[in-house]
Length: 198
Length: 307
Image 1 (cartoon, each protein chain N blue to C red):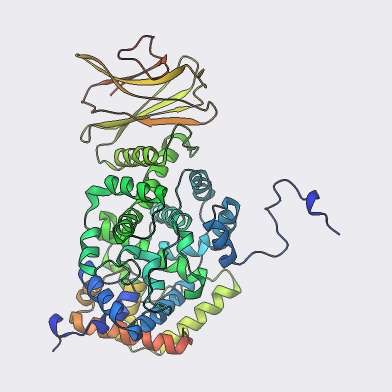
Image 2 (cartoon, one colour):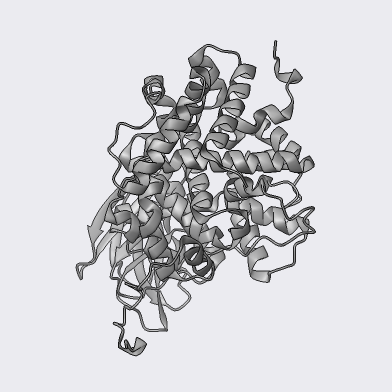
């Protein structure tokens, strides 16, 4: 039997089974820095992947990723497991922050709208690194095919491009009201296709 | 035809989940959320759907510096208390998951902040420092959830991550991310200092000058003439006996003016945003003075910068 006391003094390095993100967040809420490090290792690539998807620039994306994790540290006590998983909480925060950066920075405004148009190809140009991500890719890609073209374009521009609904309206040359309904109808369709329900 | 005014707020649910609304529409929709449980459930589901889109993006491994910087910042970054359970209208306040994660200040029903107020809050960037002060005061005294306290906390919450992070970025940039905040006595002072450093770093006229002390410690002055503030950062500045302090000075044709004291733990980076106003061309000096500081320098500077 392993005696816990024999564990290396930096013994938080390798617990036998990795803690769940929810457990880690609960520890982070109590100021546990090693839990924060572990949580970071688990999800930072996802956060940076998403942020970089929107911001494109790597250095700026890392900056925003730091912001996001500092916010996680600060507000971990406000995460409520009953309202959804830790990944949901964190990725929602990540997307929000990336969008904020786009809206607030000149760099964001300078992004060529072609980036957004290019994004209509929906981000599947990367080879997925893990089975988990690959499966998620395929699921989302398949669900996306169930949308009308206009729904798909509007949702992609807004989510992956970080464009506001009025920017989406300009880019697609459709009225703002139409964009709103396309975004909502599109997401509802995706929700049903992906089996998301609370 | 759909004009803006004819639209039902519920139509905004998709754009809201995708963070595609401007502040006005966000406020409109959150007011709607506050009134409708059905809307909250839909908002939570659409938020989860948006996250599924995010999970389909290929991960990108951050550089090691990101984690190193973050870990070095934790000790000096205050954590927020849990949101108080204010007579929650219904526990299935599911939509708040989307809201609370990102824009806590505007969460209706949770913070008791009317949307109109929330909108005003998000617009008052210049009061960031004041917000930090009020926030820290509230946190330290741990009052139960008076709405005003909650709003103050919410206001603080909205900005400091950016401020602290900008400060982190600044320190990392100048001295390699070894910020430990060891010279800072209170959260409030730390926040003011961090905010000052962030402002300098963010200023479009930000400048820097580097030098070394006689003993070879590397020192950096960063400043913005436009803002009239500066900060000094020194690596491995030796610990002083308890009856002495380091003291900073602005020096110009009119003489030397004290710009604050600090101490150093000796084994990391000591830094301080200077008190008072910097004028273009001022010299910045650092001396060792009796504890508490002196009116005028009493020793030869161990550092001097020409801005």
